[in-house]
Image (tube, rainbow, N blue to C red; front, side):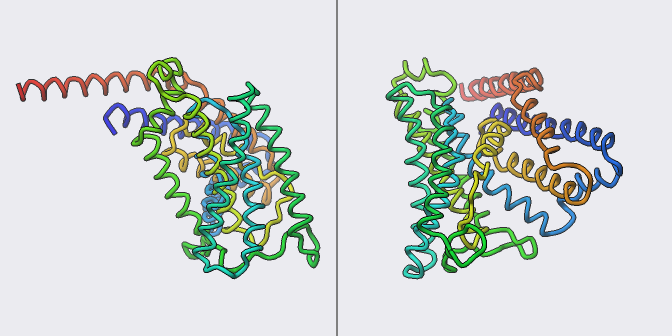
Length: 366
């Protein structure tokens, strides 16, 4: 990473933190005005998520699905195709891998069974994300509308599979038969009880970052997204790159649904959309489609959500209050000119220093 890239990365990170800080300031002022016990509520909102190892673990556990769906949306964002099927993919992949796990049972060793389920989850995600992608490419369908409608179909399909192919009639709620013990992820980090899918998320972030910034396909994606005319003139396969990016993004959302089921559930019991796909869009916007910033954005969003849960359970503030904070953060981070001039000045300065260093090195070798 050259000096200019480092400056851009640092400024984007500062932008996110500054936006969250401003949103928090507004939230704290609002809490102070509307709460009967503002000091206690503010203390719980800010420090409550860190008040016990279990709550810290809850932040990390919540950030894991946000990371996968955020990475998914980074691919869509990179090629400027807002395929929003990640929401439905997350749910249906969890459903399908649960169905497959019940069919496999204990017939395979745990590690082998988990690898099979990852492959199934990724395959389901890639296939589903291809539907709106191909519809747009071949039939000029609106990809946003097509993917949103597809999400509704997937949610009801998952409920149908649960009711008629996996349902456990011995329990008092709608849920599948218990999943085999051999496929469940263990808890890690002691009392925090973080699911082992944490390591899968870390590996995913590293691999996606390498693909984005060290591989030819990543370069093609960024060129197609930033300058389609130049990409076309350069001979880049536009349709192949756009569809390929969406397939990889869908596969990541599918793996995210798989990790969530194997790490946090004894049985499949989702009867409504998880909203994690749309949370991933928020994370990708916060991260400015940079996969290295996705974990940071995911942890921030998870911290805010857990803080809202704490305040809701211990105070007089409704959990919907969190929507205000999220809205402020998104508005500020999505605004191109927020800290834009500061960013440009630093980039110009870094570029000038790099150029001067290269000229000096050339003079020494001459």
